[in-house]
Image 1 (cartoon, rainbow over the protein chains, first blue to last red):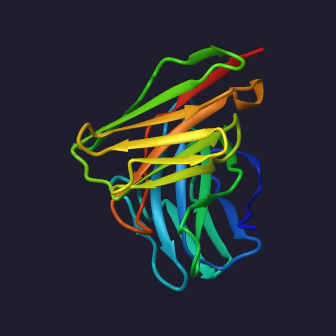
Image 2: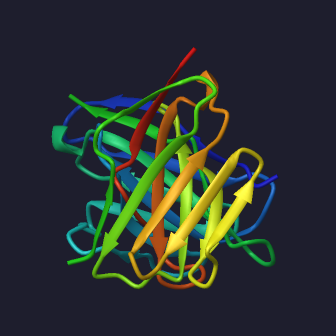
Image 3: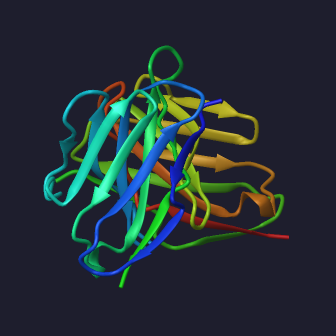
Length: 117
Length: 112
């Protein structure tokens, strides 16, 4: 149990276009979903925290108008990178925590590799 | 500022030996410390969680210690196998369900 999926697994886009990444909890309801970004050989950096039906909370330095997060249901959160530029190229990973019980562990998705040309 | 440091150098060990990875932190009072495994191009996989009032936690060949005085956690893999080769991340959180702050990870390579 506790499987999190992401789609797409990789995407290449042109500079200036927008890209949407989906994060789904497949076998549990997620109270909270987190979005991270990871550059090569670096740590995961938290971008934002999202709760179902609420506005996302962004970390300092993350532009909320550029990285749009929607958490419309207990099993789906989306991250849209608007007007993407080459410096946005990175590995984007989401995670989700369970609704109730358990150890409140974050379960991570497999990640989405974004390359902006 | 808050800082989490893991061995930046890759750790190379022989199969069957015990691997020991270190996680040190400063300017932080975590309630929980977690260890994750990450394979190249994949998301992290949860391994173990230890609370601030726990000294040690075990799971099969894995053992984690947590010393809040030294502000350090040690992660041990006994009887290591080539399949254990991966990057291992430690992560801290100040509250239950709160955001995780990750270290940069230590790459472990187990040679047959």
